Structure formats: C-alpha cells, structure tokens
Length: 98
Image (cartoon, rainbow, N blue to C red; front, side, top):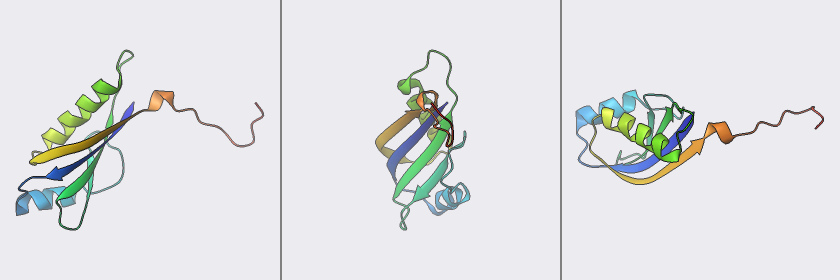
C-alpha cells in the first residue's frame, strides 16, 4: 500500500469545480483521494491511497495517485509528489520487550 501526497495548484477552477472539491474535502488517504486547499482554492493537497503489487515501487504509487487525481477532472499543475510505501513502515508496540 502506498500513501501519496500531491501538492499542486488548480488552474482555472470554475464554481462547479469548487463545489466538487468541497465535496471531497478531507485529510484521510482514500483510493479516490481527498483534497485540502487554501482559502482561495488555488493551492491544494491531494491525498490518495494506492494498492501495491509485490514488485511495485514509488513510481507506480505516484502514477496510481496521478490517475486518481486526473479522474476528478479539475485543471491542475503538480508542484510536488511525496510517496510513502506502507510496507516499509515498522510499528513499535508499547510494552513489548525486544
């Protein structure tokens, strides 16, 4: 599983687009993706969760998130992409002796 964060700028977002973005607001990582944005709705952060196949790397995660972002249909410019491979995350449990 990849968690991908895309930071970008909307380009020419109309009122219908603004309403659609408001409908998908949130900070959770979901398969369809969620948006957070500045007050003017010009800059945004898109969070997306992408399934990982055994041989997939960060590039596949980023491409999957870009497909999800494109599916929303809003004009945008990508400024930065961050990918976290959740398979690499180790959880330390409190109270367990190592």
